[in-house]
Length: 145
Image 1: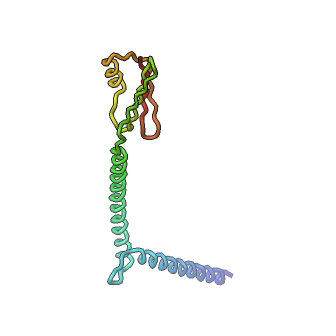
Image 2: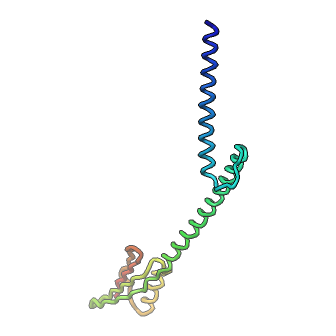
Image 3: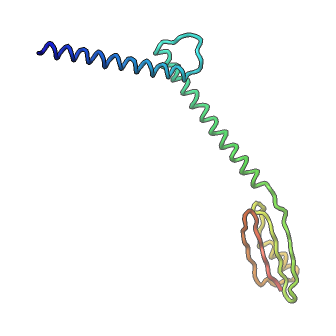
């Protein structure tokens, strides 16, 4: 009884080992197909070394591409910011009051206080001043007397 059980275990181990070798052969074949084309046949250790070098090279390229992507995104963002919107000044006479509307782009460095100072230097009394943002524009409205 012991002989029959031992023989079947040996056959079972042989089958398991044969399946393992087939599986490993398939994996190495797949690995070989993923590597750059080679002129000569490589041993398994050479193939693993080649795969290691190739993966490191691909990682380096990936980092380089990520850097390029970031740089291009910054360039696009700068171009969007540089799109200038010409200021539009609209003055309405409301009888005793004057309404001044100024529309500029958000990318324009503009101080509302400077604009108010200019109006005051010209003799206007400021009643109210507001600022609204709409999309990429800033709309300033000043009501003065």
